[in-house]
Amino acid sequence: MSDQDAAFQAYFVARSDSMRGTAYLLCGDWHRAEDLVQQTFTKIYLAWRRIQRHEAMDSYTRQTLVRTFLSERRRGWFRYESVGSPETDRAAPSSGLADERLVLMEALAKVPPRQRAVLVLRYWEDQSVEQTAALLDCSPGNVKSQAARGLTTLRGLLTVPFDEGERVR
Image 1 (cartoon, rainbow, N blue to C red):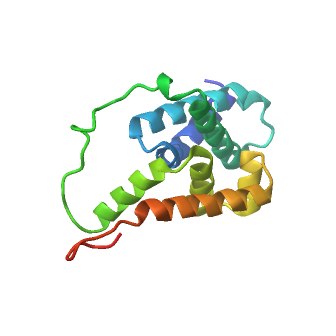
Image 2 (image 1 turned 120 degrees about the vertical axis):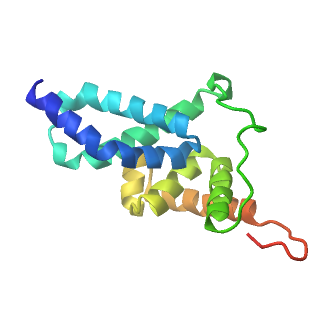
């Protein structure tokens, strides 16, 4: 194994789990997240020899992951395979933080892809407006407006009328 292959392998081992978590937040499905991470690291591997600054790889990898996700979303819904049916993929009833996390993840999956990418980068990955703009190749103003729209959409999805005795989400 060459030194470059060993360096790539070490980088993959160190960062793939983190990128898988980010991919899951983007797409809302662990199987698709795994596919996104594989596609991302395949692209990174193909460019590995041309990359000069391996110490700045996290930003490049995150950018590649987000762009791969957005590119996949542009191809159309008809290219996706359903892994399970809604009847078999329901969560078991329970209460507490796990329920709130599931509700949040379901709502996040309904936010449009570009807004979801901004929300994940800004609030999960803790990227600045400028870093997010660079990753998405857009202006900081666009990031701010997409974040505001995404948060409004997310709040609308999380606001549920309630009956007496039911918790407000």
